[in-house]
Figure 1: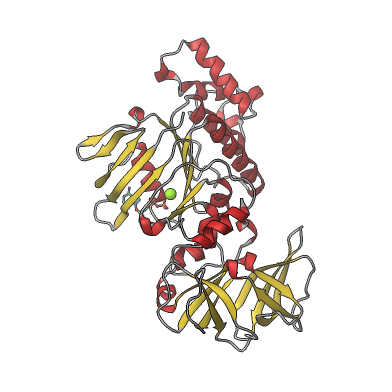
Figure 2: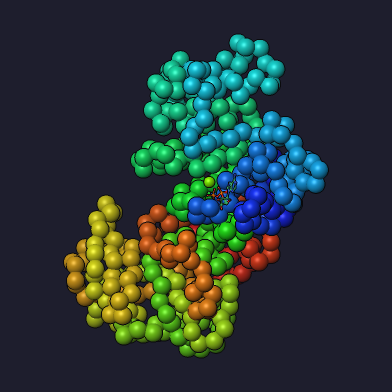
Amino acid sequence: MGEHIAVEDATKVYSGTAKALDGVSLEVGQGTVLVLLGPSGSGKTTLLRCLAGIERLSSGRISIGGTVVAGGAVHLPPERRNLSMVFQDYALWPHLVARENVAFALKRHGLPRAERRRLAGEMLERVGLGRLGDRYPSELSGGEQQRVALARALVGDTGLVLCDEPLSSLDADLRERMRIEISSLVRLAGATTVYITHDQSEAFALADVVGVLERGKLVQLAIPEQVYAAPATPFVARFTGLAGELAVRVLGARRHGGTVEVEAVSRSSVRPLVARVGAHGLDGGDAVLMVRPTAVRLGAPEDTDNHLLGRVADVAFRGRGYEHAVELDCGTQISGVFAERRAGRREPVGLRLDTSGCIVFPAGAAATATIGGMHRSGNGSGAHTSGDLGARGGVAGPEHALALEAPEIANEVARWR
Ligand SMILES: Nc1ncnc2c1ncn2[C@@H]1O[C@H](COP(=O)(O)OP(=O)(O)O)[C@@H](O)[C@H]1O
Ligand SMILES: [Mg+2]
């Protein structure tokens, strides 16, 4: 059964560097899948290693299942924390066959050898490797090795499974299949899972709850739908997929429901639109509109409900339809604009923007939030969230990071679920 995890004000400073973790607090409910999302260097691995007991916290506290495992003078070693890990590089024993690799995880349980073999065989069946138990890691493909590693993590029935980018060395097609397998297997096992990735679509697909890390700080902790609809900061918005950004003028006062009328500062603007006010509020007339790809509709230039006009810069066939990059007259590009019909390159088009995926931040706040020095946008295709994402565990975090009570979000989330 999964354990409840509590991290309180966790800080980690490696000698001579900036804070790799900076006051991170979060709770993960029993059996919840928490995905930690952040760019390279944001502290994901550090947090996972502190949870595992491989690294020591500089300050703060971690408890697993109500037992303090790190904090003050306490530091339990990994083998006393009732957890298992899955790594990007699989970390299998090369001199043991698959079944022995899995059975090895049961050593400390004090079971007889035959019983360990039986349980390991069963778990290999469950990950679809029943017939390959006698192969050495070198005789298995990357995906098969990762399944062995997963079987090893799950066979011991630990209360906490930690995964450090387990899919990042697999190719795209296999990655998607393994993501589904991991998702269903950890939920079947009822294990509390902390899974880290830098891939927003993987995070949204897998998570009950997403935690976004930026330079060692947890900047948002919320269900995927909320991260998408109400990113806590411009950084979170950019990192979780934007079609584009536009400089806008705020036209009126904030309305009921947390929306505001804005107009793009661009020759391409043909009509004001209503956007949601982001978590930072607004501080005057100048703001930046961040647009989710799901909020943009492509139409003909003469349509009366257009907000913006532009020309198709590029079009990509995506199976279900086409994704367009549209260049506005001001030079700004809006990418990931989905349409079932193909609009030709250089064709004039109109864009209609839906309030649900248009978020405004004050210009100052937006200017300082960059990802590794680069603004990131595009790739909306993986960011759709729909359907049942599984049972939500109870997760709490710092107040600013968990504004679940915002009524407009609650309604939106209710609609999506
Ligand atoms: N063993 C280490 N010694 C010194 N600095 C480290 C060590 N491990 C990580 N760091 C630094 O801590 C920060 C966070 O790293 P890490 O937790 O690996 O990030 P992520 O997994 O998100 O890419 C980075 O600036 C990294 O350079
Ligand atoms: Mg890492």
